[in-house]
Length: 209
Ligand SMILES: [Zn+2]
Image (tube, rainbow, N blue to C red):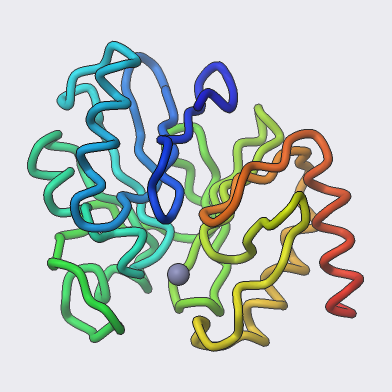
């Protein structure tokens, strides 16, 4: 599904996979469950891109539903893998994670404030140590990973049992409000267009942050 001219959401994956078109290349945000790479590759083909047009795969964090197809997608596309440096050991299989995926080398370790494929990296730990939000200032859009999720047009925290440090996650939710944005592109649920900031503010108020 087309979200913006240069942002697409691959249909039908468990955790959302976004494609960001930048300078004739494609950056993929998150890689889906094992087997879901087929959906990603089919979608790329529909857009007229070949696998080798993908230059980057950015992982928001190391959970199974986000990196299950990372290794195979990397092998097929030849893209470089980027993730926060605190998340890299989990993706590389050096530190354990529940429901682990095949280890993949992170060639581009990211830090808070870095820019990649036109997106700014915002370190948002809590759900996992190196969870990130990716911010497009140009679009006024944030790719949230599992910082929040969407249901029926509203935003919620990820259930605490899935997060390493839910209170830290809340702090990260509050901090995001400082950014200028209108669109929220979560990993679970549908994108909230135009009214993303309002919905985010409601969540912050509800959590009394
Ligand atoms: Zn997660």
